[in-house]
Image 1 (tube, rainbow, N blue to C red):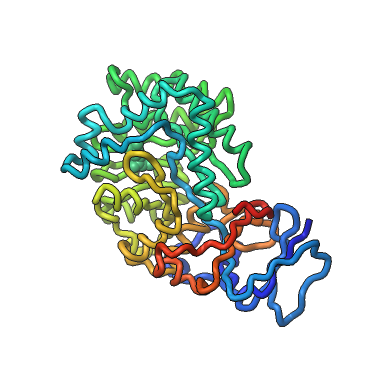
Image 2: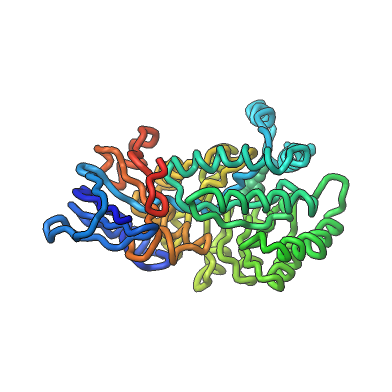
Amino acid sequence: MKTLVTNIELLAGIGTELRKEGAAMGSVSTLKDAWLLIDGEHIAGFGSMSEGLPGGADETVDAAGRMVIPAFCDSHTHAVWAGSREREFEDKIRGLSYAEIAANGGGILNSADLLHATSEDELFCQSMVRVREMMAAGSGSIEIKSGYGLSTEDELKMLRVIRRIREAVPAVIKATFLGAHAVARGMQRSDYVRLVCNEMIPAVATEGLADFADVFCEEGFFTPEDTAQILETAARYGLRPKLHANQLAVSGGVQVGVAHGALSVDHLERTTQAEIDCLKGSGTMPTMLPGASFFLREPYGNARGFIEAGLGIALASDYNPGSSPSGDMRFTMALGCIQMRLTPEQAFNAVTINSAYAMGVSNIAGSIAPGKLANIIVTKPAFNTLGTLAYLHHTPFIESVILRGKKFF
Ligand code: NIG
Ligand code: FE
């Protein structure tokens, strides 16, 4: 099946580079008055309307007055969870901090209790609602973490649900094992780290359930030493790190992540020059989660500092019940512009190609290039510049989302 999209006012996000860094983050390759050819699940080609159209299309979609962009890539989510933590939302409004709620036994432990009491089928149904909502909002690649299980059995339950989601949806789904998200109730940290290393990681690897390993390297959660131990074990089982670091304090997580070849280090609300220096020349993508800063009223982090130092950054939603209950990447992009003072081009690259890199899919997604998956968004008329996406931040902008060559929404 070949689909030809014609009269595209602006085709944006063209390119084959696997990530963008420094000054290159400020530019987005575009073509005005363009066509795009989709062959099956993939992009077959694109060109200018004035140069003539390719033959052989089975159907034609007229995108006059509209923009076509790559679907968003969301490299950091916790989209599989059970129930709701709305009560804690009210606690936060009354003045408790995220760290105080966690220290009182709420937070992640609360989600772990709810998940324990929920069957795998029910967890799948609840999570699919969110994943469908994310795809309808334009996400074509989604990373999902475990980490609300906190026992071998429940971590496996979460990862099996992620596998079922991968089989059920057209979006590219990557799975991350985050057993070290919090210390399970009633356990000592050192015993829990041993359980993660000796039992959980081997069990996860035996079933081939995860692509990556993550640790919440944070004050009050896991130390850099715990993190190193877990990442060394994970590496023996072929799991590359993607870390939570520097959300609530300067945790040392960036340094541990880079030392262990992490694909990304995420959060970075609190970073110093030492973290920026450490990331230079590495293959690790600094990833920021402005939805969590927004919801927790935390600092947004020094995104421009990273870029000025020649690094790239990715932006992701962090969709989760405790610190970022939104999986809307357009909102993430708008926060990048409004609160982190990224240009629309920088924010766009951060939610497409760089976020694709941060989840290991920038060879197949994140830009418009022949051979890549046909994961694209067709905008409504009036959205014909990248700036309008962030500027008109909540005006509905999606006309359709095409995933693997088929109209999803
Ligand atoms: O990325 N910080 C750790 N993990 C999530 C929050 C998880 C939760 O509160 O449920 C985050 O913000
Ligand atoms: Fe997170």
